[in-house]
Length: 362
Image 1 (cartoon, one colour):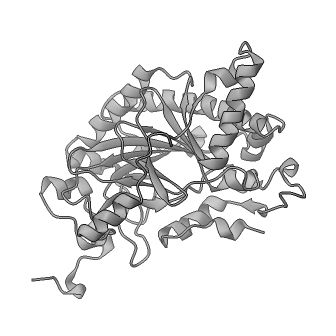
Image 2: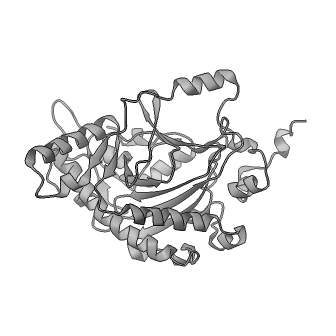
Image 3: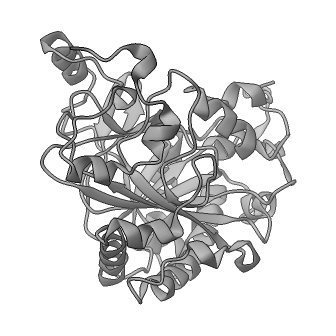
């Protein structure tokens, strides 16, 4: 017999349990996780919206060509053109040649997996409250009627160092903190290289985006664990959304992430050593809409679990950002206002299941 609506557990109760616990206890996904239609019609609709075109691939950009002073100018200019095209059409690219060894990326996935595979009581030492953001658990309770995500995560402020809350940094596995510290250093170098390359691809002064972000632009790390799901036809690992940061750098161990282009979903492939660089709303604002902030989602799977690490690069708190003057022309008038602490506004809309970019439009 179906449960009466008023007897169903509220989101707060479900969020106090981990998705991993539901899976261990062999529970079906509770009603608040269900966000997709079921049945044959739904299968057809979902398949129609997923691209299977082998020629339409997320672009791959070799950052070593863009950062090497010894690259032939034709090769360098060609890669810059590819970068501009990728970000104005897809809003993302797969970065190779970033200087981070594949073996180190494998190490990050390994320590993340070891953390999530620990007994629940060990992970609960880092648990956050249902309404809090940083720490281990699920995202804060969304607005009524919004589905929950089939995932558990560990969210940490990693830069600047004075923002770190070490009480949430795992001591097990023992190498976790050192690995994350080293990755943070590498992410700072990578965001500098990417920000300069993006500026050059638009014929702008190379430091212009770095100036908008600020010297102490925060980096936040989100380790995601997507458990196997008995009903992947009904449940998403992460609901469709665009990010509210400047841009996001994503490491994934297996496929599952999809990006929306036009009206089709494209699966982000796993290429050994490659990292996905995904534009977010504040980069769309800074480029006056030239670069796109794409909607993306994570599918759930009945066959395998999945680990990912998203690092969000966001302008300094209380710092105004806006479209670069050189990108405002007669052909492309100013499309966005100057904004401050946009990520906070974005979060309020995200919790309602909608985008926030319109609040910044002229």
